[in-house]
Image (tube, rainbow, N blue to C red; front, side):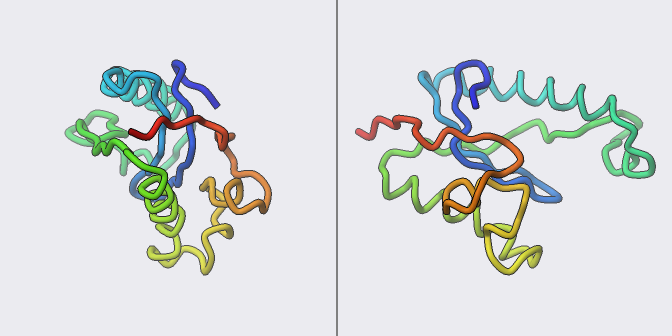
Length: 131
């Protein structure tokens, strides 16, 4: 999957947060890409019929899906990539949502363990350049 030329390599969508591993041709564009992603996602989600759940996404009388900040980490090795991918895939297990990572449908764990596909396509062939 490509969004502004950025590859989605791994993800998990938790009830209170999202983890994603993204492949960037130019990491200097990270802030710009995240701003665009948050804006597009917020508009799409805001347009849905959320019923009573909408109150959980309202702060100071305004719809607010995202925090103003995001945490970033530049992955510098294949070992680090594997550690981070395992960490995000085991997040639903640590959160007592499932027993096994590939049981969680809102994750790329199935893609990476060969058990099928998650709800969002990922680029397992993204060519990270480790320095």
